[in-house]
Length: 155
Image 1 (cartoon, rainbow, N blue to C red):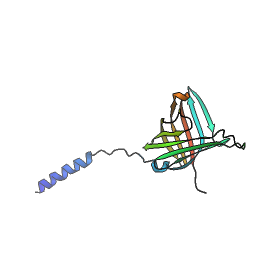
Image 2: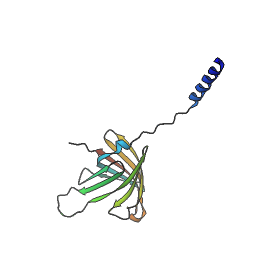
Image 3: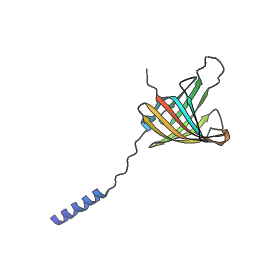
Image 4: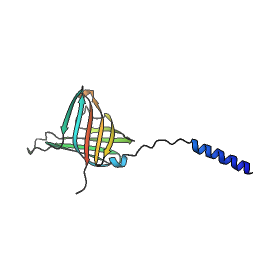
């Protein structure tokens, strides 16, 4: 009986020791949810880099809940009634690890609507950094974009 118990203990020890640990992927979905102020967008197309500062002349926010995202952008110009510079869109999203995918279900430019955009996301404190490829042949767009957002806190 002691030999059987000892043999069982040996097999159990070997089985447990051989079990491989899967690397854990951090769940970023909770960090992602909230309201975000776009600080800057850097696009790279054909080796040319363009940086847009969203803290001057225009403002843009992104709102992310459990299943959907939306964004709103407008000009900070005091010229009333033009509607110029207004932009809005949104849709569903998915996130697995740092892979964030937007399904643009709603957008004023129908060339973009219905497209899927894959990004990698990371966080540095209250800053969300989102990098991916925006490719919309119908609109002549094919570039890498990195957007930096700051979490909007309640006042």
